[in-house]
Length: 297
Image: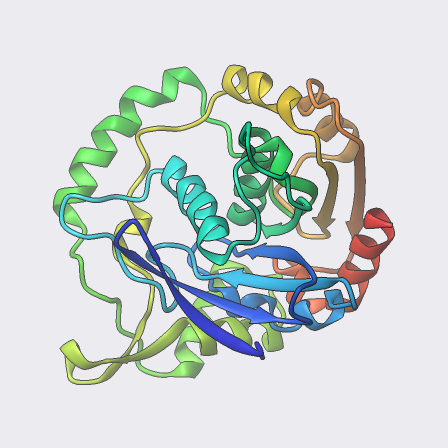
């Protein structure tokens, strides 16, 4: 559990942050995966704490206890990056480098799945602010240019067809079953932890249990990244990059990963934790923490 929680006002959008570890220590930002919450790091965060490290887990926009975007808004991937940048400013963890400013100690980022993609893209966009990134079974998702026209059509159609109210579930047990059906390798205790943090009573639907995430998170983004874009971004990364693959992973093999990251000039370590699902940081937090500490030393 976090030492404290804080609601940040980021350009009018309320974002929940979970803070733990010694105050004044080097910040380590924790970025969760799609449809998850910052609470998914509750097992890993205490293992990352040290006398010089403090963790900050965000609930990304539309997730967990953070606000949904307002009328006319959406969840374009670049907006998550803007939220991260604004959150660091709001928490005064790191400040943009300017001619008359003192450059602070760069932060470290641990990201899972979608959060891993954000971690690497943010490290490319703000290289002076990030010293280390750990990507837990995730990296930027690539769409081929030929797929973009269909995605544009899906985006327009889904905005009309997906109702914007929380999806109800009969019980916590049913929520656990849904998670394990979507990810058969997911262990029961991990599914229970994800479901417990991901649902709550919805007062607008007779206090029935419902997922916290905004249904529009399931709308296909019309602004995907392509290989050419990523190849132009990766050389900008200056942070040490650690990738930890799950046993049941969608990521390429290590040799293929290095080919995909061929334009990355920063140091790169890759490890695989066998017998783990996509949520390896919940199932094997001690092993994940050990790899992170070893890379960061």
